[in-house]
Image (cartoon, rainbow, N blue to C red):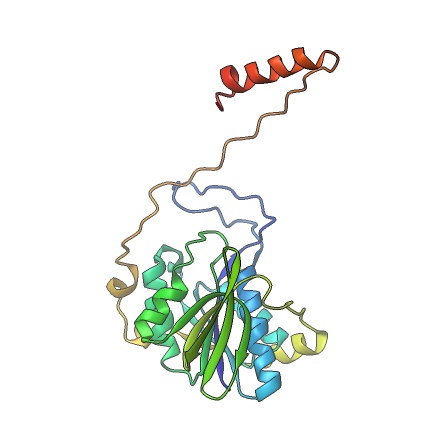
Length: 260
């Protein structure tokens, strides 16, 4: 059972984000980058399948030089191979551009199941997984919370409003992972040392038979980024007369906060 996991490297969710001088990108200076948290669930599920059924776990990413660090982290946790499609301007590709690159890379690697996180933390579009499945012509099951893999097929569980949906699909297939699918493991010291010896297969967009127009002719473009407004402090209404306090609260909501 060969699995392939598409990962994204994103800023640490605890980082304090700053806007770059061009107003369209984040300032990466001093930022810590991590594997996108939902991709960790995808990776863990692939490793568990390898431990149960054998085969390889190949991690693939599209990103600049720094993204190799995320691949090493995945190798340290239990992945066996890694492919890095390297482009310094990868951040300028929209979801379809990313999906095109991943689809081209995936075609060069043996696989039965392709895993992704349900969304990349940061942009939060949740588009790359479904687009990838469409480009490859594979069945897809998204936001999966439980997975069973049998001979030539999978059975996936996903939560819907007030119920659970159970879907069967033939292999190869694309699965996007939701929180609750498993509990991702940490890298062991043995895994970290072993990962250093694994060669990452590095490719360019051109190596995959794609042009810059294929990847960067974006249908979605960020025109500007803005940080959210600073939160104002709370307002305390003195106790005492409950009726007077209630009137004061209503006045604040309607006249100042204008929430009603």
